[in-house]
Image (cartoon, rainbow, N blue to C red):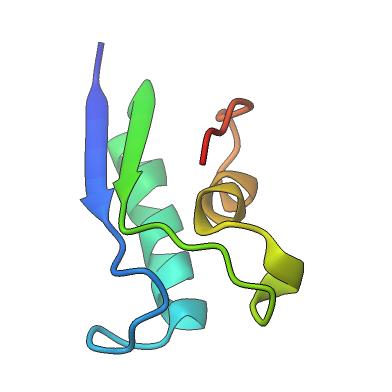
Length: 70
């Protein structure tokens, strides 16, 4: 079983805006093709993407991850 873990820095901008990082995270997940993905520093804020938490946003950008827990 391959597991990938990433700290996504919530909606902080120290490592660039979320709109850019989300795409980079999705690309890394696709390249790594883990069986399970664990994300740290995940946030859920109404001002971003209708309040969807970041784990759901990443999972929807990458196919093959039907289960998400926030």
